[in-house]
Image (cartoon, rainbow, N blue to C red; front, side, top):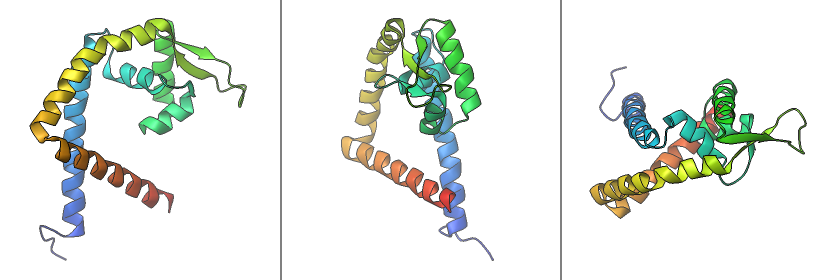
Length: 151
């Protein structure tokens, strides 16, 4: 069967290639932003995941859509750097919770001004309405893939 420009196969391929490119672009921006605070994008991502509540390594991995092993390695490095700490987990004695230290929170706050400038520039470039639509579309795509993965 020949693929037309709007066939499901072409739409999936185009979406995947665009998301892969977008992922690379966002990682590049994140690396630049994180560097100003002495972090990598990956360490920033893991530390940022626990700012509102301590989480287990497995929960962080699920939230970030990555492997538990890669999060464990990063969490251990953050603890070694004094940016995070392990806390007891009342729900599971062997799965400790990762939480930021005050130093970790201070490190994250150093990124905020540059992050805010980038966010403003991007929303100015796209417009507020399109920015909201993009976010909603990406969330819907992620949820659809979750549902398909469950089947």
